[in-house]
Amino acid sequence: MVRLQVRQAELAPFAMNICTSIVGRTKAEVLNQVKALVAEKPDVLEWRADFYEDLKASEQVKALAGEIREAAGEIPVIFTIRSEREGGEPIQLQEAEKVALIETLAATGALDIFDYELSGGKAHIETVKAAVQAYGAKLLLSFHDFDKTPEPDVLQTILSDCEAYGADIGKVAVMPHTSRDVLQVHEVTLAAVENARIPLITIAMGRLGAPTRITGASFGSALTFAAGEQSSAPGQVPLGLMQGVQQVLGDDAGRLS
Ligand SMILES: O=C1C[C@@](O)(C(=O)O)C[C@@H](O)[C@@H]1O
Image 1: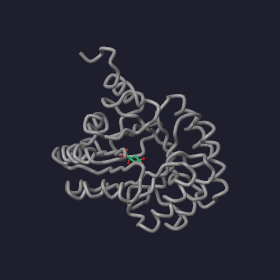
Image 2: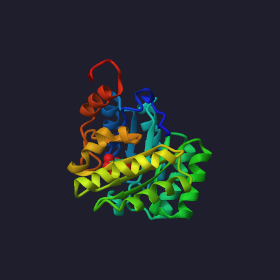
Image 3: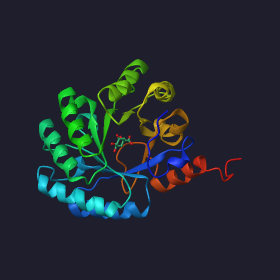
């Protein structure tokens, strides 16, 4: 099993690193959120740039990425433009413009990991991968289904496609409707991580799926997303609570007896 190497790697294999998302609409909101979140010491930050109001102004986006980097210090930052079809905010960019923006941002060296959706297609994935990896950042290929939990064989294929398409990290987030759906996310993860050579992140969203955000490490998931000032997807546990839980799960100070 491959672990995501960030700050709390020593907690593995019992606990997960925790990521929290910046979802500001304006520059001021983004920077205020970064400042507030950094003070809470998440292991990873995600800039959900689809929330940002002016993605078309690439020079401003570049400058803002630099300011986020500076404020984040040592905390790795994921750059994400979640598409509307996969649960993101409406944006003004076409797919090719999104890819071009990622290329521009990768070259700045300000961001550590770039999330790109598998549904963007092979050609775009190749372009993003080349740009991101050329500048020493990591490619995270992702898949989201806000309506349902796909069948286990479909989920399995999606996770192996992430690796086959050259990702450094793979991620799926799906919506469960039954407890069996939740169990399937864990089962698929357990099977997938046995063969994977990259870290995998799996999430069942919503209230029903919330246990996967807490106990994912036991089944091989590498990272969990917790709510910062605002949540970025349904079912996220507040950051402070999640830190407490993962700390207890991950340390060997005898708090679990
Ligand atoms: O892909 C993910 C996972 C997520 O959707 C969640 O369910 O926590 C939250 C998103 O911000 C992130 O990009």
